Length: 415
Image (cartoon, rainbow, N blue to C red):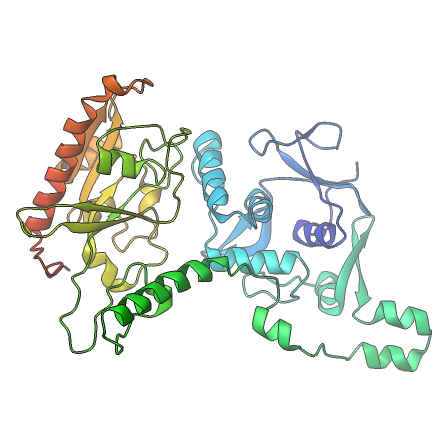
């Protein structure tokens, strides 16, 4: 195995574009290969130039003004098509190997990195340019490495090789790729627009309901926000805003999108990975009568596990945040510190009865309600105490809504 020379980011790009994926290894060399990122210590390249780099090696990809290590870069690539699994995998690695082992890249950074690694783009605003010979190699096009040294292949080289004409070579080296209709509409890589279909279905459903009611001048909200936004009709009173409950995206949470409806709606706890769980992953609606807010109408609650699609005004509608005691959950929130968050929003921790409540939850004070459910046994008759816990949750949510000035038309004024 040759010494680890050259730039690991360029080697990874070349390996991906040539379909010769590198392997994770325990130590240097390809003899101790592993499929588990938790066990691996090195990333080994076996094609062209055989080289092995520690996963802790800093790369030229910069995030939050600091270099991102090779482990974080490779993890983002492995989960390029599964963003939800990426977040879970990063959390597992940080929990197992130590906090800050993996740098969790935001969506825009991951998209830029993956596009560059695939060879769809030669420029990246997050990648620090090479210096010296490496910079010249990078600017010329597709990169190749031999014995650890970086050489270059001009953009039109493959076409020139067929013609052997030096005049054509000079022309090809200065050519620009002309964008066609597909590349303009779809961008630099294929994009999955299946989520737009779901948004459009809600949008069209609202329009059809407005037509049936005889009001042809209905003005639904923009489709990208139809799920969370209210849809006032012209000349009519605006629809009241729905309160929002945020769940923890942690894989260790007892309550996730798949079982929250059974818990808060039906009053029975089932494991989130159970075969009888709902399997819902994007959004859950639960209807509940909140007597102190409006005794004549039920209130619809929207439950999500991420604020990624939030508009700024949606934070005034958040009435509760379920947490497992892990502060990383709040990094993308409006209020990023637990003290500030739970002075504005009710915090709820649900654990297993008989287990110790995390010290972090205790340290956050009275802003977080700590509740416990019985250990799960597949017997409906044994779940009678779940209803008591659920009613306690709803009682605290109602108190929070009343304390923050929530009315039958929507939220009160909040900082």
